[in-house]
Amino acid sequence: MGKLVRDGIPDLIRADGRTPATRTLSSHAFLAALLDKLVEEAAASKRRTRGGFDDRIWLH
Image (cartoon, rainbow, N blue to C red; front, side):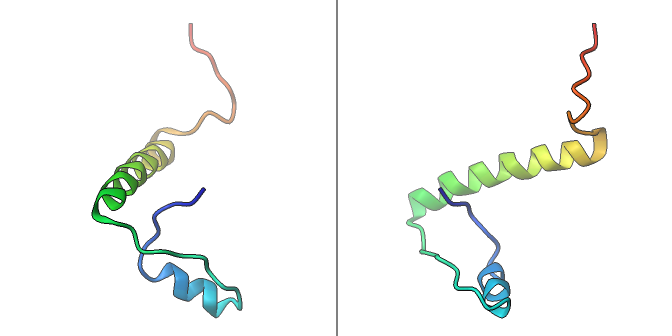
């Protein structure tokens, strides 16, 4: 399992003394990964602005 990361992230991992496992995606795989990333970022943004579900509150 992996995820699409910004271009500079592998360099940050190397600077920390670790070796990133990366590959370059095909156009088709890139579009699919970009869509997944968009959904991930939208969910994170919504949590930041509206709160998360840590308190497990059910409104009825």
